[in-house]
Amino acid sequence: GGSSSGVAVAVQSLCQDMGVIFMAGLTHSNDTTGKDKRRYGFRHFFNAYMSGQALGPILAEEYGKDRRAYHLTADYTWGWTQEESIKNSTEGLGWETVEAVRTPLGAGDFSQYLTPVLNSGADVLILNHYGGDMVNSLRQAVTQFDMRSKQVNGKDFQIVVPLFSELMAQGAGEAVKGILGTANWDWKLDNAATKAFSKSFGEEYGSPPSQAAHTCYVQTLLYANAAETAGTFYPPELIKALEGFEFDGMGNGPTLYRAEDHQCFKDVLVVRGKQEPTNQFDLMEIVK
Image 1 (cartoon, rainbow, N blue to C red):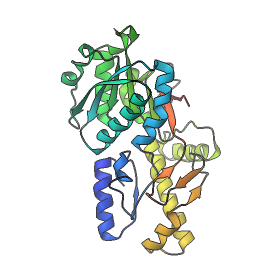
Image 2 (cartoon, helix red, strand yellow; image 1 turned 180 degrees about the vertical axis):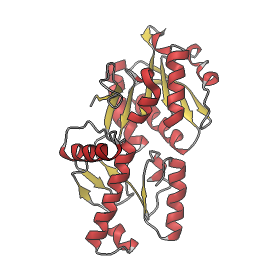
Image 3 (cartoon, rainbow, N blue to C red; image 1 turned 90 degrees about the vertical axis):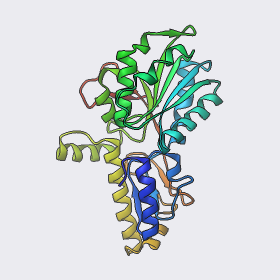
Image 4 (tube, one colour; image 1 turned 180 degrees about the horizontal axis):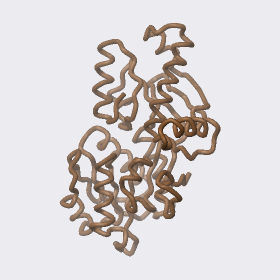
């Protein structure tokens, strides 16, 4: 369960109190397996730190190391840790952070937050937004404010979305083209596990699986496997079976469930909105 890091952190804490295993779903805040980690909580999804580490070098490679960034950040645990992680990564590569502004969750209209950006001296806008917030802020930045056609400091203005998904790309439409970000998994990956899952999911639901559907399905399989391995549903024994567990065949490649914090370690995808998608489910390309 959990489709927001704020929710996941709260539910994980409740599960700890109740002695129930919590296999976290869609949660990307560092805090879930960081300061708010719990013995009874496990996360397959990647985190904000991983996004920063994966994306930073690609941003420097594509946009150069002399950049000035302006952050708009969803004002809750995920947004805070995503902003911190991408700032640490980009500043380590030479970028300057001009401003970081917090935005209320579910704002809908981001005009008042976007208006100051082009007068700030920044030449990159980083949207630490997810879901509906990202769809709305990106569409407004690209279509209403026409930011991507601007030149600032002698450079083409760029927009970055650190955490991406195909579902968000569908919502953002044309605005997503050329935008860089990261993803936990993509249904177009060329490996046997991804192909098998995408095929069966597509036959059942009529569309390819999202990264959220994938990570929740994987978490369910991992829980079932731990129960089979332990030969019991008794939580302390399941915890032992999951801690330090190494596996492959889930579509992400070799993966470790690190014992110390119950965070999965695996490859992170850097992705970009396709300029010429072939269909509504093919909106992102894997850069690296």
